[in-house]
Image (cartoon, rainbow, N blue to C red; front, side):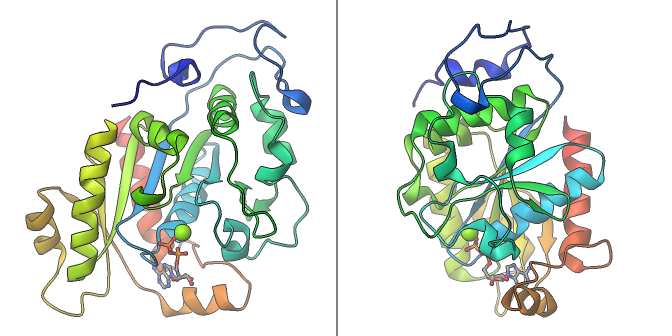
Length: 274
Ligand SMILES: Nc1ncnc2c1ncn2[C@@H]1O[C@H](COP(=O)(O)OP(=O)(O)O)[C@@H](O)[C@H]1O
Ligand SMILES: [Mg+2]
């Protein structure tokens, strides 16, 4: 198992850092700020198209709705880009390529102000214009800077086969890992493989989210039995959400939308668990 580097000691008790005490973060160098409570939630899919990115975005939205500051961080790079799924690809603001100099003591508040927003959620997205993934030390320093600024970080992780060293460390350091599992035979098989990867990375047991529909014999009870893990929520399939994404409007996650309701329940469960 990898050992969490210095950057991830952010999960240790807070300590005041004087201005300029740590490394050079370029334009995102952090002034001395007090630390606030924040959490890392890693969202991972059992297979492609599980609805992982959508749930990660909806959860960040629900956390902000509950009064918690939360940022969506797209680590599935290269990929379509969270901004495209959310319909904000034309919004100005920083994406991973603009953060190449964000190393050392990153100013999380300044970074949040520089990010495009989807509804009330600041989004750190990849971009299809640049295939290269962000440098691992940038990813870790940015996540650390956000957490130190009191922002909860919702990570949209790629599938385990695509994890960078930084993604593996962040999965291991996350307070909670959500594993999105389509209620199908391949979905459960992929989830079993993801659960092994999480264990090997040193992550805690994931919270399983069983995504509907269940076209065959795999329901939430069968998912639990196959994985030996609790299903904490069932994620509905919402055809209107998929249609809204196709129109470039981003997913429907309001209080009356099915995915919005599930995300609100998950946000409440996270609050109870902390
Ligand atoms: N709960 C859902 N109901 C309906 N459509 C969904 C749902 N979740 C995701 N989708 C649609 O499925 C596609 C893949 O979703 P995405 O979140 O990108 O999956 P993943 O990140 O697991 O590959 C997108 O077009 C999205 O609009
Ligand atoms: Mg995705």
